[in-house]
Length: 527
Ligand SMILES: O=C1C[C@@](O)(C(=O)O)C[C@@H](O)[C@@H]1O
Image (cartoon, rainbow, N blue to C red; front, top):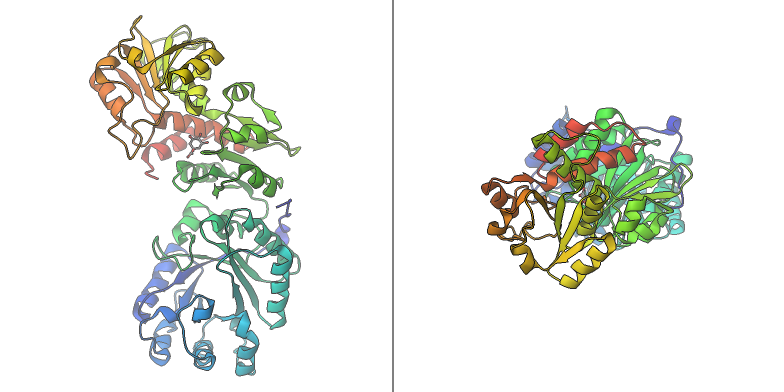
């Protein structure tokens, strides 16, 4: 999105969090409304077509009985718009009218039949009930012009609230919806504008930044009414949607996959703890170049890059940290105030400082020099992570040895950094001196292949420290066997905790990171 400016604070009201409910009976749905209220939702959408054997005169009074824990939207979606109802329009209109008469705060009607519905109502809509006129596209997101024309068509029906829900085929689609939200905000048109499906996820959170009237959420995982919907609890507790406003800075992790990343929980928690007005989101994207072009406005201040973008990211930056340039991979991008992108590699910082700290904790060492200086440092692997660890160790003055299954790649990396290469067979008996450090920078041993290990237990006895960049599981087979040999181990979470701290400081423009909180969240959080 070429810089859709966020609306002025004064024009903004809080975006409502609405639990969209699809229970099979009216009692169950009424209980879910109460559960949604307990989770902190502001409203509930009652998808009455999901109720088995729905009998409006029996079920609506149950659902709309006063006092109600939350204001409700009554939706009775026909099959032709992705719902369950298969009959004629008129009986459905009768149900919506009954819902209005029973005090529903909102009723949803599809754009296609909105005029017909209003004719049917002929003035019988109670003043207090707001009419949402909705349009859904379950396949794609139209152009901005087409979306704006839909807004006009919906407004022309006399709708109180415009609702447009489209689908994302790529994350960039969402930016068009944001432009529509901004346009409507300026014109004071209440709009629910969301992009469904996994790649549209950020729209459900960031609509709060762009003045969306309401966002939908599920009561719990598995109960989504639309693909890619967040839970009420995640919107409120993980993404801090109540704190999101026009000035909120946007940060996130770009990659595929990204939804597993611990950074989502940890960075948002850390932002909240220091009062930083930012939100950290999953940017599920296969095209980094396009993503950075699309989300180029100044409030998108930082990005964590993960697979498969760490190398492409180097080419996207206007400025590169010198070591990151040597490594040829970055995992952190910061947008500078002049709009230029700066790239850093915090993987190597995280890994190297985790190992240094472990050495410092076990022996008194001159704090002015690195405890890695002059040590023999063996790296297993020759990919991006290995490059980062090897460059980091070299920079600290270690003598670096690279071992890799494909020996030619070990030789190439060794040549690049000025080290030595070994075959994996040679590594088994490699023991030129005591006090060596071993770092696994391959994915061997990572979940689900937890039985894998890059080096035999017998060979581990040659080292005084063993580090594993793998952090799922926390204790890999390599680390377990090293510990059994009495060797000091450093796990990948130690690296992650440190790299996330550095990323936090980049993303917040230098705020001191809440290190204890980040560490605790990384060590305990299972996601
Ligand atoms: O390896 C990692 C972890 C990470 O992917 C995450 O899930 O937080 C983020 C990356 O920037 C980093 O290099």
